[in-house]
Image 1 (cartoon, rainbow, N blue to C red):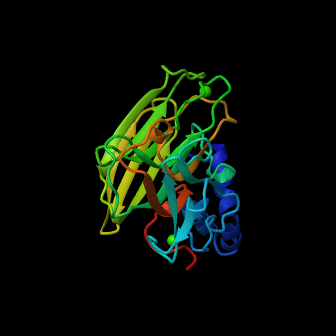
Image 2 (cartoon, helix red, strand yellow):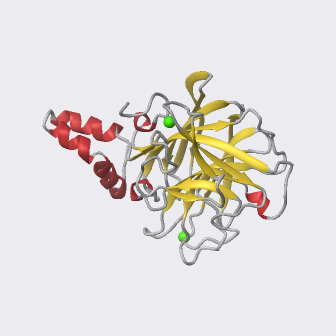
Length: 291
Ligand SMILES: [Ca+2]
Ligand SMILES: [Ca+2]
């Protein structure tokens, strides 16, 4: 694995406490501890919507938008995001949590990063054949010369065909225009409401040919990781180093910006959001860390 200088710095910062203890034991333990210690893990065991994580942000309009819940992947808690037609938060129909101010989670071209999370689609879910529901985003700022409505680098949605769909955007041009962005997508399997889905994504972020996205999936009712995607090629934008990306999870229904659809309320559940440098570090399966 290759980590950019930025990623290496954050991996060390995130594991600093553990590393200080391990140093007294054996130098060989330090590397293992660093590698498998996530720089972020949000388990919702604190009973609060920020999970006790400093800097975790929210985009919500209303009292019902974001709440903790006992419907958890593991441990005693998870988070529920709900959006209703007509809601607006952060300039859109959404209820999302985000890591905009958590520097350790920021990504940039050249970084190689694992992400893990669990997401639950309620058994009462009515599929919307007209518009997708976005449940996780690798969201980007934009350079001053990029066009205004440039989308995120990548996102996971419940697509109109009932599939989990990974969509990702890239651009080798320094100044993105509406026609220069390359949009790609891959279905990752049928969405099965009423059960937890575990995902692990590995992104080798690049606006060039050396980019790669690998995805693994399992459900709580059928444990056993299955690799569901391995896409080589560009997967992000050509931006200046200070233009970064961060994570968002919850529910975002972009089509409601302009028109209603066949559903008027959407609620989804998330648990175990993690960022790290190995699969083990971000694996959403298993009990809460430290318990
Ligand atoms: Ca939990
Ligand atoms: Ca750019």
